[in-house]
Image (cartoon, rainbow, N blue to C red; front, side, top):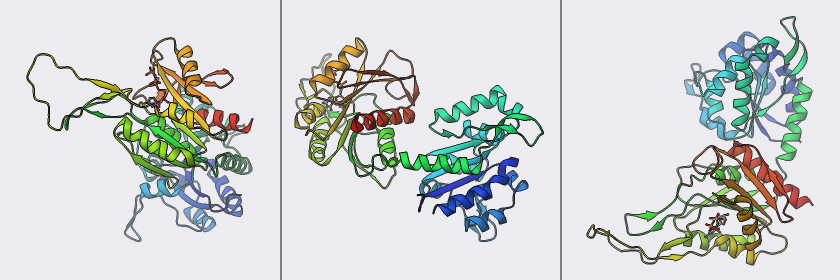
Length: 400
Ligand code: CTP
């Protein structure tokens, strides 16, 4: 079941490190490819020799390997892996991960991860219950990392309570069901629009908007991680996306986005339109820079074509269409009317009145509405978490 799955196991300084050799045996039996990395203090609890023997690979501890003279690339490791498992995760390393500290290989590799990250805290009960630890656990979750809850039981300190790392068999089951759910869009081709559109006024200026593209890119990554082939049509953004199943097509204007999306849509099973597309574009694009002359200047604008609406008209029965609606007033009513007008299967609404929702933020707060006017409200979450919720709702609707 885990055949050829590439798993990085990051071990930090906790006595629960003694359980990891058993976990490696179980994962290898399932066909997984394992790369172990350790913090320097983890080597006090278990030897790299044991771990490299079981995993069939040298263990990485330092960025620089003095024996071979080679540099261990944390970036390459982040690109290689299908999953990072930070287990056991000590209170110290967890605090550093939560705050972006990068003073060893283990931490730089964590910051470079392009794949999902699971973390299994392991520590003494009182350390675990400290508000700082609890805050760090929440912070890591808010970045989209997956918590493997510690269990209750006897601890190495002699105390009894919460803080014990999940047993190897339990972790194996969590990893297996994770990969099972991660392939729930296998065989599907998905079109995603993202970012703003830039409507040229002259060779220097344009009409744009504040969209960062983060929501659309998070959805693209989530689909790819869950097995889909993704075509991402993106307006100009500062974002980078690297996944073998994601093909990115960069565009500038609403017109270009329309042409590409309509071209691609017939071969897609699902389309999710997150782009903030200009509704109007300058009637005329000046060939030369407009020079400053008068006190007033008028720009004539004409309406652009609505991509989502055109897709709603062209949509076949088996295709699934999702729109986004960013509203400032009368939010629910506007979103519901867009769902009807554009013949959508789902609409994801966010309001600029909610703090931490909408443009530029790393978080979003959404309400999802389906064709039967069911309304699902979600609390504020990271955009990666929101992407998961959107995909789960799509899956639920497709399975009905
Ligand atoms: N959309 C699109 N093409 C356009 C305009 C909008 O594909 N030319 C899509 C957006 O990507 C989004 C949805 O339509 O998924 C709603 O966009 P929004 O700007 O909120 O709605 P409009 O229909 O443009 O209505 P208004 O601007 O009046 O709120």
